[in-house]
Length: 111
Length: 115
Image (tube, rainbow over all chains, first blue to last red):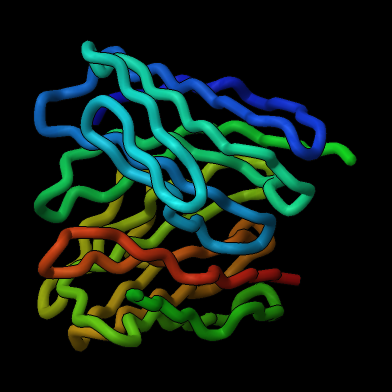
């Protein structure tokens, strides 16, 4: 399973755009990139998933360069409620492969 | 959307007792479920893979006789922590894999405190 590297923590003010970058140099051809959000004492919540280029949904955008060795989660205009841990995961999107979590990035949004 | 529930959401027990945690997929069938454990300020650690109708597969370092997993139906997997000790106190999270889209959906977690 591809290993991921993310910043341990980030701080941001409310209303700013936050970009969290994840490195996954050993990503395999069949791997997808998925980001999860976790609040304290809750299970992880799916945010966004992509394979290449750019993916956007109502919550975030995911930018993936052509070599796919990294990805950037972009959260537009964060609010205090976006304070959470964000996990970048890389895994094959088929079969019974469990998701393996790295250390994640602890985002703190300040008023 | 797919919903996964866990019961109980929190439990406090005495050292030496056993505790059962249930994981249910409410609106889909899950032939495979996963159990994770999370200590404070740490990431989720995969404990085992639970397959309906067969024995669970445990990760290295996880004692199968201490953490009993039963996946008796397509919507229910249980994790029993036997002879719990204070070091077993943790946040236990399950996830369920949809059979069609192979997406994983996580439960809300169960906080176990062993006194």
